[in-house]
Length: 121
Image 1 (cartoon, helix red, strand yellow):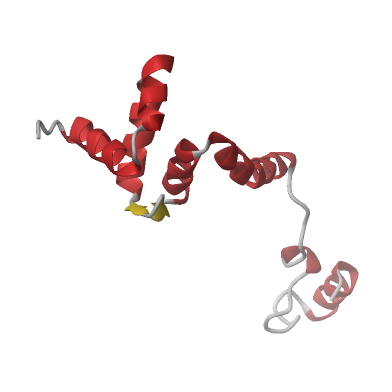
Image 2 (cartoon, one colour):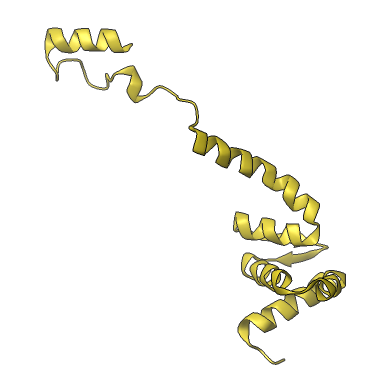
């Protein structure tokens, strides 16, 4: 029912006589995204490309942002461990960052969790 027909019925029969489940079209019509929503959608769509460009750290970031777990080089990494790996990576200088990226996934995860929990093992 379009808005004009709804208003005509409301005027003719009163506010409660329009019938159950009969609402003006503006209540259920789809609308386009606002500028803010469109920018957020564009950012989300570009996320996969950004993660792929970053390599292994991008895979960790993907796990963190999607709040999931995934296999990286055959090793299952959960969200908490991935967040620890990203935190360590972001705090390293360039020289140590390259050493970090050269480590196997298992060692990266072990080091990141050890630093995050304060474990001395």
